Image 1: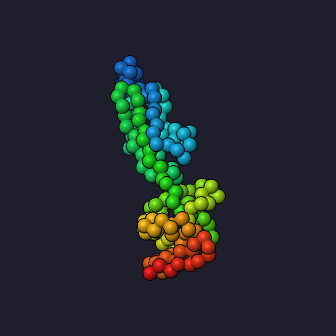
Image 2: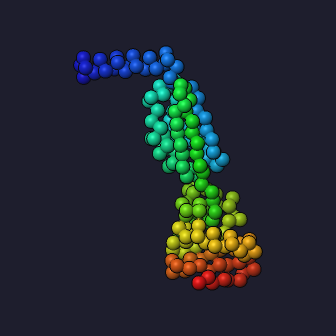
Image 3: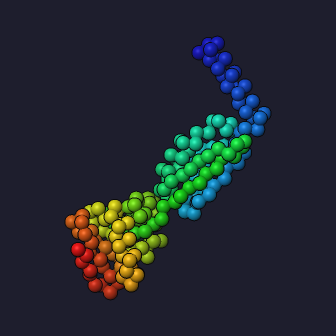
Length: 178
């Protein structure tokens, strides 16, 4: 409190004015890579307002907030001097539906759940079931991709003993992989 606090506030105000006078405030935010994540949700998580001094933008914190969104796999937030913030996001790609304890969620190649998605929208994706199925889905998809005739027919895959798969095909045939 007292004179020291007043001096710091005054210095802060002078610094803000100098940044504004020099044109070093956020005037625009550019966004690349967004397809599934709502633009408003990205803006809310960024928390950057027009006119904010560029030095006050914590790009690491903004990146971390964006990466907390369900669809965002990675994000890059950069200052482009004198007055622009550039945001580039990489979204998750849904590859399977994962059934766990009666609930079904959409997962990406790494087995990361994409929370809050309507699974009916992704009904064409294969269903994976069993302990560890979500984390092993990438290797399963890599394996069946080598067999194009088989790939298009797999409707579900059951992880057995956290070490192998049983595939259920569209004609109700079950293939037990070693």
